[in-house]
Image 1 (cartoon, rainbow, N blue to C red):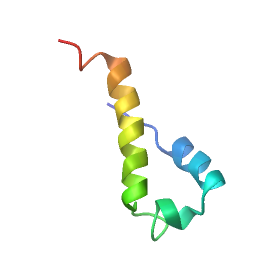
Image 2 (cartoon, rainbow, N blue to C red):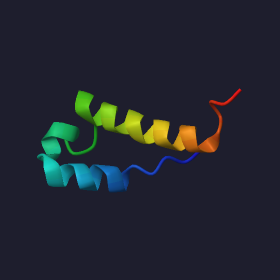
Image 3 (cartoon, rainbow, N blue to C red):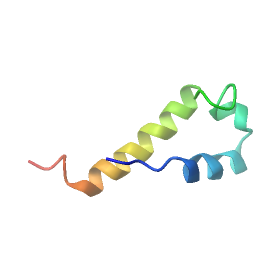
Length: 52
């Protein structure tokens, strides 16, 4: 399953400095991990994988 993250990080950096999301421009901070989690959940919920 593909989770597109670039758009989410691009939008996030318009709200807060990039270092808040990616401490070295590549590796996510705790906030960056939360952003990734949110995007992952959106995709998984849409996929129906969580439905029994």
